[in-house]
Length: 182
Image (cartoon, rainbow, N blue to C red; front, side):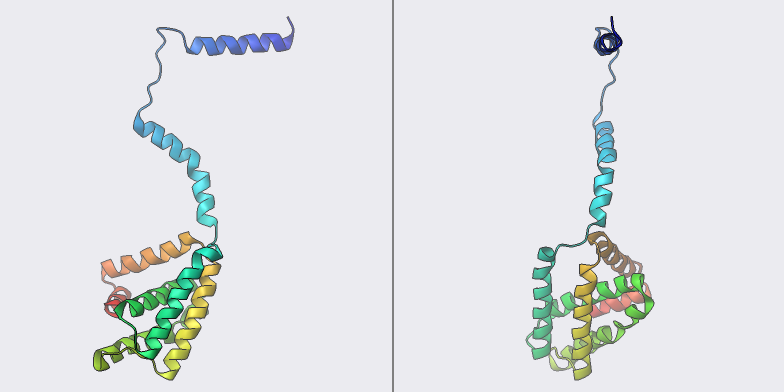
């Protein structure tokens, strides 16, 4: 008998021994199976966390954001438009902080303009920007789009979680955000 035939016979014997009657078979429980599948899919999940947004995923959001900005500028916006724009710029500012402190500092005028816009709503019952506010928010929207194009969904989700965590913890930052989105 040659070497290949012996190897095949040995493998067959091992396979048959596994299924012998009376041999204890390891039972699979649901949690064990779930853990095994989870471990086997982990590399795929990690790769998915690293992928960037696709343009088709972002286009609709960019259009809605610009639409909200236009409505805020002409005074026809509602609270949701202000909230949507504020959160988007706040997310971009947080992500910018992770990239570069100087970039993050450039979002301050836009966030301040959105706060002034909210105050204007309280006094005149219409949203609106001053000239400087309009320019700074316009820049912030452009920067938001660029940051989103070069970030992963996981990174932006982490920024959102950070905002929610700050609001829940009632930190100074969280209280500022909470007052600006209410």
